[in-house]
Image (cartoon, rainbow, N blue to C red; front, side, top):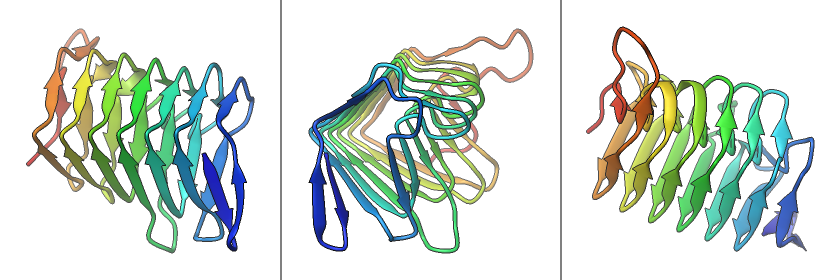
Length: 193
């Protein structure tokens, strides 16, 4: 992938087995452009974002996020909220076998998240969904596949009451909720348009 810092570039093709967040994009200081990379095999964050912790603008393009872990939110990617607007744009990428102990097995969003032509499959969350969206978040998912994910509630996608999620031409199926009682909502929990 490519990281650009004040027009300087650092190119990396694979990140694996790290005990820290792989890429950190913070308030425009670092605009991350992750392209044609494998971010996998045991990347771990104690809190949020096992593979990418974003507080700026990040473009994830034609990448594989596999087997990443977060101690709380965003097993593969955490898109946080800060004073500046944060946008995470995911294109033609795959998220598989990621784990978050709390929310967003693959991706947890608190700001703006765009997912296009991507696959989110076989991720596991202790609480809510492969893709989790909070009350401050806006998610647009287009021409993608969200299947075979497992969570306590909302296996595929979980949206809070005030969050906005728009899904178009997307397969959202075969996700599993492990809740014994209450609202299971295996494919989607919350309001979607």
